[in-house]
Image (tube, rainbow, N blue to C red; front, side, top):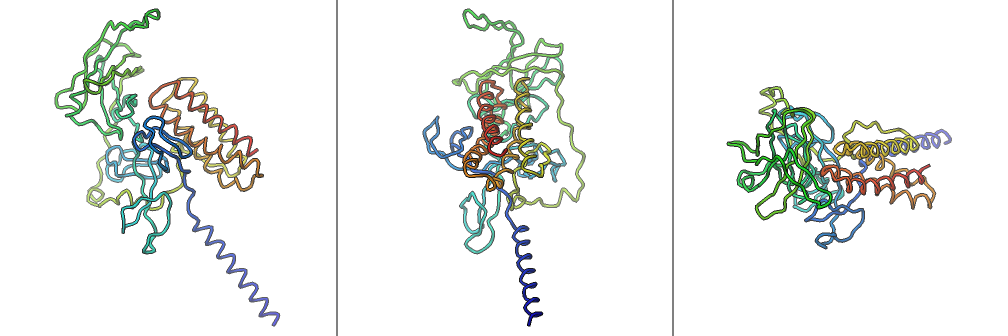
Length: 394
């Protein structure tokens, strides 16, 4: 009897261990936290429910993540960097929203789960408005203050300036709308601090190039670095916006990819929704090696905060998103460790992690428009969150 009882005990322990192992293997990936945004003003981003400060509509929940998208085949969205499976171009970093749906209905859910027929919900990664801020022609990319248009300025040859105009998803503006854009490029101007007036000394009209999807002007600037300002009005009744460019070298069009093998051309690509059936945990896009310990994660978070601060001090706003997004992923990876904290520290740490995540998205958005005041305000939110995380987890 003792042998039977002992065997049964061993068997039960093996079953329990196997069950625990299965639970560990099948545990769902950590999801990015919920944020709240305005349906009409996607740049409004909060960490709790409320109303939009611009239109007073109720904010709606959204899960934001960073992904990698083909610059040509925009339905190709991957969770890791690499090349497009259709054209072999390098994937570019974008911001997406995560949702889950069922084949039996069109409803979107913010959580994975089961459909009414018992099948798992299908995960989808959809490009978010203002989620693609990558230059397509080797130039400098900015978001317009109207929060819809985006522009790219390029200096491909001496004395030639080109202006590309995009919509809120980074798609080139159609010809019918491009012709309504009024713009000029200024290479010399003076500013009188007493009258607060700017006098243009050398300006050139930007006109739609024949059979081309951009505006172009011949300018008098030849030496490098070349400083010039595009002054753009999107529609005759719109406000005029200013975009400042400094070109240290001539811009270059991205190199054409190597030809794709015929087999790859005829093989149907999986839809973006299918490819993202199980959205993975947040990716920083910065080649981040996640530390193995809680102390290591906190230390790395402090280092990323310093990198962000130094980039802002140097005025390198376009690069701020790299350490900011890495910090976002570090903050998300700390969430499971909240359970190890004492109650008082947990009450500090949980909202602090949310502030770091929100601050990273705000830094990304502010960096795209190059507005120092907005960037410094976003960094204040971000760095305060980092400080509270350090206080809670150390």
